[in-house]
Image (cartoon, rainbow, N blue to C red; front, side, top):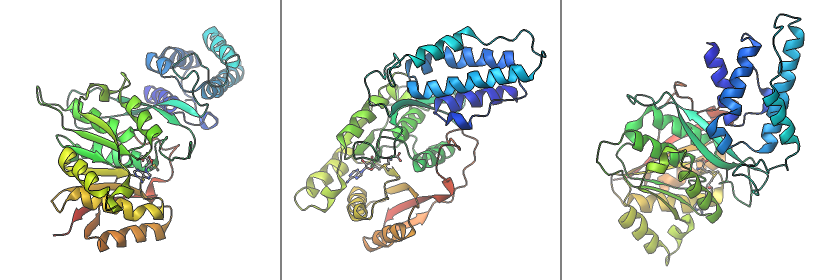
Length: 359
Ligand SMILES: C[S@@+](CC[C@H](N)C(=O)[O-])C[C@H]1O[C@@H](n2cnc3c(N)ncnc32)[C@H](O)[C@@H]1O
């Protein structure tokens, strides 16, 4: 139990859970807690190379110091040998003197709102896999940055990823097209699953991650290629610019159709949190229709319901365009650890929808 509580601290630090809501395990001896913080967080190779932003680290270590000092005072001599680690203190002082985002790591010179974020998840049902896998991304901490929503990972992406972990046959061995992929969380999870389950000497299926925004796509590519991610070993992941509006344009549509149906020819189409703007509904559905090409292909989308009218419009437009839509029955198991419960919006507002072309 105490190991689990300690792991929860590591996990929450890795995905930048708000430090003011951090609960340190009360029932673990101070010395043991401090040892864990130094060895597993301060000296963690992954979290040193792909470190949270200096701003985040500063807040986190301040909170650690306050907590350790307070508890050692409250203990009134119960922990007489406890001393605050010099390493923790020195690290904090160093952070105080560093520029806001210049933490000496790969983040130097980047926009202050960007940070590396690491998610831990379990690959359920995959014999021999490590107990948890990490996925690291360079993300924005803002909802919108540089005019796009694509630079961070959204709740629907965690939800769909959790569904795929619980139902890995949905993606294993399948060529996949992701629409509005953002910076690649879902793509990295799928690529990781495909790498983990790869049958010896079998080629990996193609995985196409697409988005309209060039900065988003560039960040996505970089995230996929971080050597710490399993997607690094997937040799068939491609990032491609696709603008759904082309599906409505008489001149551009044939080219888009040839790219999707001939070059890519995906067996499955996926998307998360791409139904958020009423103006995008028709272009998005036209792209889905075009990608299905009247075949037996399916599309699975995780949709966050922020506005009921937008979702009703989306569903009725899909019907009008000859697409059948059904809810995918799924109660997320919480066995996997992908959903950071304290940083995501309420997952009860996410719907999992499956589309197929009407015959
Ligand atoms: C809310 S973000 C979701 C990102 C990611 N799927 C997730 O769930 O974390 C919506 C994404 O749709 C992309 N997008 C918006 N309009 C688009 C269009 N016309 N064509 C293709 N992608 C578009 C944005 O660039 C952005 O990456």
